Image (cartoon, rainbow, N blue to C red; front, side):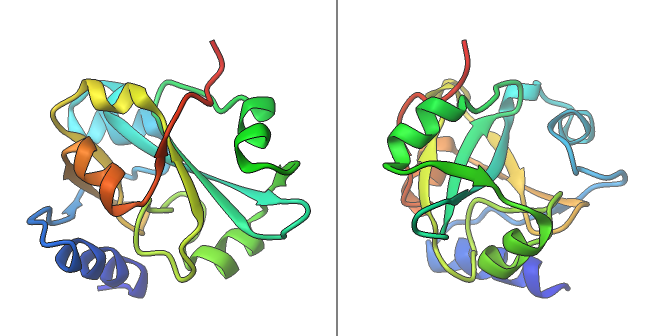
Length: 157
């Protein structure tokens, strides 16, 4: 088991959740691929999008429904600072995950987090579990709680 997957499993266990990651036959690097593998709607995929705070140089996490896009202006307003692109090196250094497997939990350094209300419309959602082939099912209300995210609108219309 990879270090990244172990951190996600540990975070789930620490929260007292029985949400074991699933190893999928195909890759789950994109929301569309993950939805296909999980046989669910694209919006049931919780994407973990990392931005870099330009003033704080810290990671800011936006957990959004798979079919939604983060609105840069709304995201920056929520973060209270301009947000820049987080390249692969920054993402790995701050979260411990590689792009394509960034989980919403189990980060090396817990980022400020925001969650898309669209995810609450489902009984079960799926999120990356730290690798390009692992996802975990979870009640979105539980994910909101254990990710310490703020529920708010930050998506494009």
